[in-house]
Amino acid sequence: MKREKSAKLYAEAKKMFPGGVHSPVRAFKSVEGTPLFIERGQDAEIFDVDGNAYIDFCCSWGPLILGHANPTVCSFIIDTVRKGTSFGTPTELGNRIGQLILDNNPFLEKIRFVSSGTEAVMSAIRLARGYTGKKKIVKFEGCYHGHVDSLLVKAGSGLVTFGESTSAGIPEEFARETLVLPLNDLQGLKDLLNDQAEDIACVIIEPIPANNGLLLQDRNYLVWLRKLCDDHGVLLIFDEVISGFRIGFTGAAGYYSIQPDIITYGKIIGGGMPVGAYGASNEIMSHIAPEGPVYQAGTLSANPVAMSAGIATTELLLEEGFYERLEEKTVFFTQILKDHITNKKYDMSIQQIGSIFWINFSKDRILEADNIDPSCNALFGKLHSYLLDNGVYLGPSAYEVGFVSAAHSKEQLERAADIICKGIDTLF
Ligand SMILES: *Cc1c(COP(=O)(O)O)cnc(C)c1O
Figure 1 (spheres, rainbow, N blue to C red):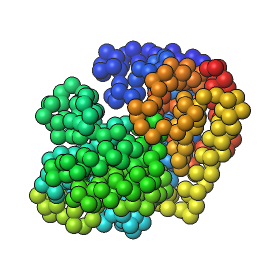
Figure 2: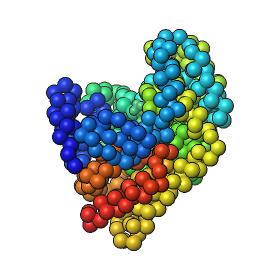
Figure 3: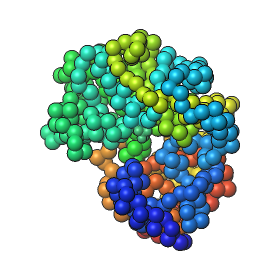
Figure 4: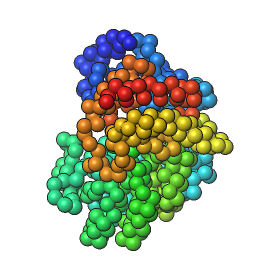
């Protein structure tokens, strides 16, 4: 397979942009080769500038639950664009998507639209601090919440645990306001809240951790998390930027039937356009400006073009049986991989929930980020290159999950599964 044009564009891009990319995960740092430059997408496929086609399981890192260039989404966007791209005023489209979401999600009473997942999380944290009047926040190792200063933090040395920033440019004083725990550690959580709850504004978690492998937690752990937050007067934030509208319309809150205090969204909610949102009860949301004292604003917030993509997408998600069909398809695909791994007795497994899957280079389900063996990187790197050569595109890192969209046909899934099985065979 030729990828000369991509390689040439990447060489040019490196002269203009740091690392040649606008988001670090796009660089092929942990796999072989250089990033593909994609020219177009249609349904489940993407096409690079060299004319190669790939069955796509990255789906723009999650937003494209309907696949690429869905005709309904595209024509709604185009109709809106013709009327102007932005006004900096309220629009009826904003009301329409607000209604669509609030009418179908009992976990929210009010919502505010922003322009990215990062912005949603940043605003939710500020809201939690403004609402509780407390400073510290708790996050979990292995959960990603965007590039918010106070959340680019990992557990420092020592037991529990002042955070240590994972990026230059974040003052130590900020990182110290973030406390970091391992996932699945109920005792650690109890101890931390017992000791420090009077300083803690909120606990933020990806209820379905899907940014560092797929570290599915036990429901019981999440139920306890909810209860402990209630007992200690600490807000619980579900970061559903990936899981929202992915694991059913009501996301992980609906899946586990747990009411968080604040929920953040991104990715699918914008149907492929830059949109994020955060929502909560009327009471909590009344603290946001202009109703309340917590300031948060945005020139392009609830942009009409972006809202149109969101409306067209969420309307289709509400069709009867949408999520059942998508999950059934995903299971059809992952079962082929699972059967192959079992037959060959490979030390691997496929983790799956809804239409999210993760190729795990360990037999066992993993619940804590630290239990992922870094030797998976080398294996995944080889697999990734085999898959590119054979027309299957996964995100370029062993720690990334894959997504199945409604546009993937069974025939494509069968073909991709067959290629992935053959690719796995080359590793062992
Ligand atoms: C992608 C993601 C974010 C950040 O969203 P951006 O739109 O990339 O800023 C935050 N939280 C989670 C759980 C995510 O998956």
